[in-house]
Each structure stands twice: as C-alpha cells, then as structure tokens.
Amino acid sequence: MKITPELIRHLEDLARVELSDEERAAMREDLEKILGYFEKLGELDLADLPELVRPVPLEHRMRDDVPEPGLDPEAALQNAPEREDGFFKVPRAIEGE
Amino acid sequence: MDALRIAEAVNAGALDPVEVVAEHRARIEAQDRRIHAFLTLNPAAEEEARAVAGRVAAGERPPLAGVPFAVKDNLVTRGLRTTAGSRVLENFVPPYTATAVDRLRAAGAVLLGKTNLDEFAMGSSTEHSAFGPTRNPWDLKRVPGGSSGGSAAAVAAGMVPLALGSDTGGSIRQPAAYTGVLGFKPTYGRVSRYGLIAYASSLDVVGPFARSVGDLAAAMEAIAGRDPKDATSLEAAPAFTEALDRPVQGLRVAWVRETLGPGTDPGVREALERFAGVLEDLGLTVGEVGLPELEYALAAYYLVATSEASSNLARYDGTLYGARAPGEELVAAMKATRARYFGAEVKRRIFMGTFALSSGYYQAYYGRALRARAAIARAFERAFADYDLLLTPTAPTPAFRLGEKLADPLSMYLTDVNTVAANLAGLPALSLPAGFSRGLPVGVQLLGPPLADERLLAVARAYERAAGGVFRRPPPPPQG
Image (cartoon, rainbow over all chains, first blue to last red; front, side):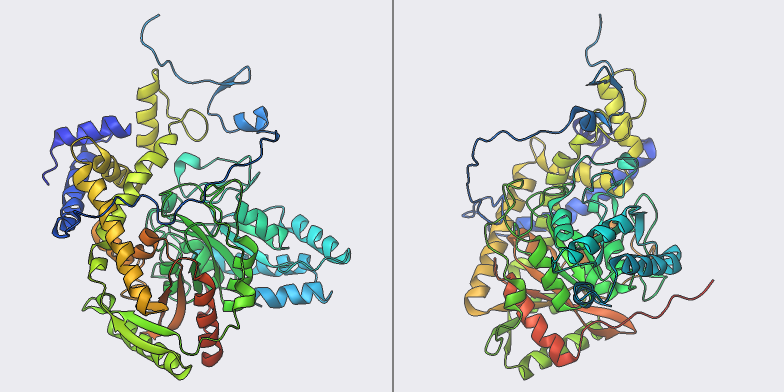
C-alpha cells in the first residue's frame, strides 16, 4: 500500500490531528511499513467467516426504571478547559455573524 | 509481605493498616526515584487505612484488610489525578471511581497510588508515557514491559503486594513476564470496565498483578462479577479462591507450536521445558498443537485495536475536559489540541485506525481483520475441544533495553505476538514466572477457553506449590 502525502492530509482531516511536515514524513514511512505487514491477512481464506466484533456474546438485560442521582453539574464542569455561567464554553463553531 | 498475610495479620489485630501504609511508602521513597513506577501518590492513603482499622475494630473481617495496592493510571479515581500517561489529561481529576478500584477498597485494600503506563495504554515498554519511562527492577537499563509497566515494576520491587492493570493485547501479561510477577487477564467481561479509560473496547480487560497465586485469586475474587454500569460485564459469579485447590491431575495441556519458532530466545525455551516437566510430574499430560491461524493474530489485533482507538480517542478534543490548545474556531482548536497534547505513538495508532475505517479501505483492512478474528476464535475452539489448557511463552524474549525498539514501531509490536490472540478471542490468560534467561525473568502463558479463569489459577497454584513459590525478589537497585 502506497501512502501518498494527499492521503496523510485526508487522514489529518478525518482524525482532527494536524501534523508537522516532519511528522507527515515519518507517518508515511511508518504506515507504509506497518500496513505492509498487515497485508499478510490477504493470505487467509476468510470468505465464509463473519465479522467478529465482540469476543463474548452480550447478555442482554434491562434494568428497572428507577431514578438515581446523576453527576453533579459542578463535578461535571470541574475539568472544563473553559466555562461560563454553568456551561461549557468552546470556540466559535459556525462562520460569520 | 504478601497481600493475604497482611490481611490475616490486620484482621487478627496484630498489624495496624496505618503502619502498613507507612512501611510501603518508605519503600516507594527508597526505590521509586530510580524505577519510576508511580505517577501520583494517594495523599489520603493513611486516612483510608484508618477507616479500614475502624472496620476491623467494629468486627468486620475484610478479605484484603489493610493491603496496599497500586492502580494503573488509566483507571479513574475520584479526586485523585488520572493522566492515562498523556499530556492531554495531565491535570484531569475524575469525578468518579472505576468499579475495580471501588471493589478492592470494599474488600479492605488501601490505594497507595497511580502507576505509569504507555500513553493511553498504547505500547509494550512504558517508554511511550508522556512522563518518562519506568525501569525494570531486575535491570535498570531495561524496560519493565508495557503498557502496565508501572504496576508490574511496583509489585516486583516490593513497593506494593498487589496492583491493577489493563490488558488490551498483552499489557498485563508481558510486563508481568518481564518483571517476574504474576499477571492475569480475565475472560473478557469478567471484570467491569467501568472507569477504565477506553483504548479498544472489545479487547480491553482489567486484571491484577501479584507475587503469589493466592493473592492473585483474592484480588480476582474482589473485583470480578457483574456490574450494572458495564453492559458487557458477565453474570458469572467469582469462585477464584475456592477453585484454587481443585485437582489438576489428568488435565490435558498443549504447547502452541507456532509460538516456539526460531524467534524464541533459547533461555526462554529451556525455562519453559522445565515448567512443562513440573506439570507432567503433577499428573497433567503435555502435548503440542498447531494453530496456524495465530500467525495472523498480530495483524488482526493491531487493525482492530487501532480502529477502536481512533474512535475512542475522538473525545480528547479540548471541549469538555482535558487540555485545550488556543484557537479562534472550533475545528482548528481541536486539531491544534490533538496535535500538541498527543504523543507520537498515539498519533500513529489514531492514523492507522482512521485509515482502516475510512471509506474505500474499510473492507480490505478493518473488515478483513474482523473475519481473521473469527478464524482465530474458531481455531481456539477446535484446540479446546482436545485440550483443557494451552501454553506459550508470554513473550519470545526477556525484557529488552530502553530505547532498543523505539525507532522501529513494528519491532515493538512484535513483542506482543504471543499475547494478542487471547484478547481477540476474549480468553482468560495468565502469565506465571517460570525461571530465568541470562538473569532476567521468563514468563509462561496459560490460556483457557472462555470462563475457565478459575482453572488457570488452579494449575498455577499446583505449579507454585511444586516449585516452592514462583516469585524471586529482584536485586536491590544500586545506590546513588
């Protein structure tokens, strides 16, 4: 698998991580090498096998609908990078006024 | 002193839990400047110890009364900083506590502190911690393994008798092998993951480190069992202590041939042969089985783990908690935050997983990995139709040197080659000290079918008795 600079830029957008030029070069090299090793999975005949997402089947259970105390708002906000009037505050998400 | 002996003495009124805390704190002070197992010490440990003393005075006999324990710093602890070994959580103080930690406390154990790990448990050496590496008590120039290297080193060096770790692809077993202690990865779902900072949710399990099988079983007894806060936790009631003395004679054991290839260190091989000889003396039959599908386990594992990680780590975006880099606009601030506060290995895995899940590559990478996972689970099912337990070296070699594998991520991943399959299939697996190679500890891995956790401990206990104990104390660190 050839990893192009364009693919790295695309992954930066998807993963919301901006790399430096130096990191981009290293990431290309590492991904090519690691994904190259992973390609050995192509040797296996997997045609009749399901996609096993979870190793142990889930035991489905319903719980009683009993109200319980939730997280105290102050505790929920205690690690917020920025807050205002009991709310989380984040940078502007929509362009324009 | 081991955990159960401390608890016995505390419950008999012969030992004060506050003194136990002081003694272990002194050991940490004497040794941890060189080993760096701990990231944060619990300032309330004495207070917790006094509360346990009060419970004993009131007539309660908690099974782990006054036992000091350490916790890998990816299990959240209310009011006590929890970093996951990452700059992004450097100042994070959780508002709640992980179930496994709560349950150890309920059993009378006293939290001494939080231990070092590879950032978000992504690594095999503890060198990927943002706060510097942990060193192996057996040789300070070597790694303790990872990602639970801090917990393993703390138990090996005698700083605590008991510690919790997490295991996504070998992160309890490989450091246990490298440091000469016992490490247990339970069946997926036997221990609640509530409060475990998620890396790869379908692979992650919480489990204990100890220096004796009895202590390991006592810890499992305390932490296992259904938790309403984790929908994947299993109903199966813990029977670990009771199961220790089950007969093991006649059990059918087999080496997994593919794990004894040319990459296996000769000293590791010799130690394992001696181990198998003891099992035969105990009346178990030891055979050999081929599981060719395991050759694909590492590739399947890293694709599944990184895919899940790329999703799980999306939450570190600087909005609700954790570090935030400045930025005028939301997406730019997120990208800057994640660029600045994630380390190189975490970024590498996020990119790998993002790639494997991305449109156009999903079927060829993530989809194929999940089908290989099914093939591996079926291979184990076939093997367990003929055998009660499987054996492998926990790792192909003893602990490697600091820095040795940092420049080549794939060589680091290959140290997990024997451990990842158990996570893909959800199997219980135990790493047991089985001797030494050139003065460094060697671990043997016992694997069982799902929910055979207790059987692994019974065999380990029989071996421990025959061998006169499995733990050897590492040499004291050089002064200066």
